[in-house]
Image (cartoon, rainbow, N blue to C red; front, side, top):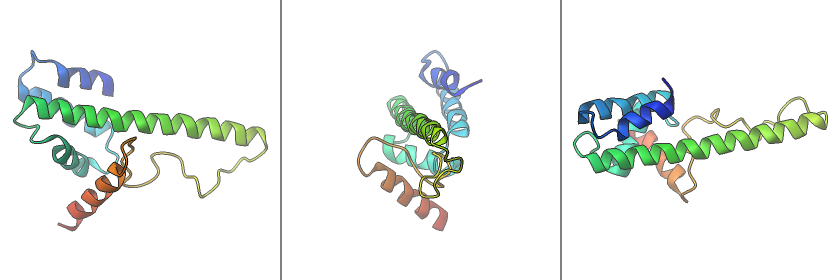
Length: 128
């Protein structure tokens, strides 16, 4: 089952809340930009106590989907860049431009400063 199917289950109001929370955790198992535990914790910081409140659960899913969409966009952009570079004979990518997803602890976002906030959150969580 893919990310989209799991996200659909998070939104399915017919399912028990616990099943929907489990579906969110499954989404995070597939896309965890700052690590599994840190991603879940950061989603709770952003959305509120999603384990208990439906609105918070849906906000958490929206935040995760927005980050994933930004990451997928970065991946597509990187792929297009690499195709152009290869056509020019550059077979090895520049070290200054790692492929999206290879950067440890990077929350992809179109919202200013959210990536830095996520990185800070992950560092604090690791330190505790």
